[in-house]
Image 1 (spheres, one colour):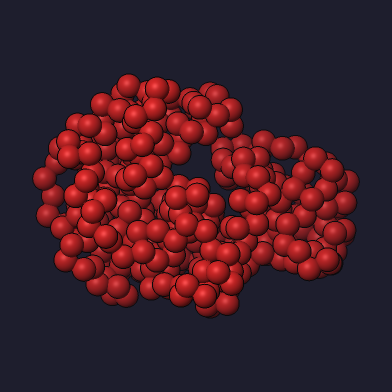
Image 2 (tube, one colour; image 1 turned 180 degrees about the horizontal axis):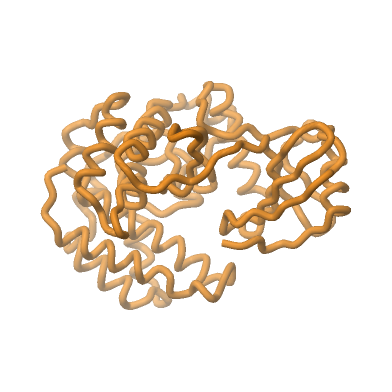
Length: 316
């Protein structure tokens, strides 16, 4: 996606002045992000990633930074660490813009492949191994994933709303004739999940995973849903799920966190739910909302993928 909020060199200088990050030498808009406008900023003291929020409110953005600070404290090496302002806060608020700044990391989003899938799988498993205690959840203010993302209950509830597109409703009913009751009742393990770990939300440097990006939909949720989301948007060949890439992904994932039997048995359904989860995100932002009206029907390709996934018999 493009850069939505346009800022000048002078405006960037004003924002950077709220930090101790030097004077701006060069400002480059980046073609990354849907919910944010992103800029590479080179200053007299280094190179930084300047993000301007286009979708999230300040509370949502603050809760995302709390997750990143928790990950920093837990030494999760794949997440970015927000930089503090002179005031000690982590969100700048300047005239009409607000957002965050991170160190700039060199790298590129990878193409799908066995090595890519295996490394992303391992990184997600390392995240899922972090099961914050109740006290950590309270101390860091770690939100439930349901505040920002869509699990089976949220998907099902939306199909009952009048505004739900009929094609989305019909797809959910066709894929889950039991209305997801068995999945919801299973009581899967909850942990810290990413919520949107497609391969294009990563940076690779010399064929090795450098960073996992965009924890905007992160929170405490079910590991199996997160795994389904990530596989559905990462293990792709020509846009469709590749069984061989799923095997590579799971090899990396299970090298850290072996799947419990009930998660393994439900993985096919989790993949379909993962696609529907992101489809609902698009509906909420682009069809029901006004983030980018030109993408109002972009959810349809995901609905089609979910139907295809559900019709195929896979041994995962």
